[in-house]
Image (cartoon, rainbow, N blue to C red):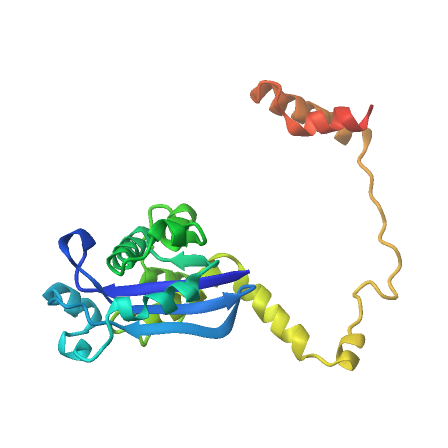
Length: 242
């Protein structure tokens, strides 16, 4: 499974108003592990950057004077994301700009979009933490991820942080840690691991009394009545007794 954690910085908020991408940062995951692959590029936008945007990311027009234009790197970027799942925080924003740049470069967005899938981590976070702040800083705090270097937004840094947030939010960090531990063990060390049950006498089975079974049956009937005959436990008992 190939996933690309992606972020952009822009000259402003609306591509429909002529705003452009000025930085793209991507981190590659293979089977939910950082592969070491990345794509990072600053871009010359051929327009002024809004003052409000500079306050967010700190990138000025002077910083970009000698940088390539999107059309110069479009083929490399498309090749990097081809066939991958893109993981983006607030995906509609970034994808709107990416589509705009792709089309300005004379490429067919529909053909590219057909070869990728997209996961929006903002939508995912809102479904898991309704009514709470779900921006990247809030998620870092919630999941215990160090974002102390994020004094300003930056596409590559934010992609790296988002990779950690995404893996934590989807249960990946525990699995990764376990994998690291297992892979670091020698065969001899693993062979020394003992089951807790080794040498123990079998556990005594305590069966329900007749009264307890009767109370259980009454409770199941009450649940079934409240569910208008939809109690799954009762249906399962009917199946197992026939």
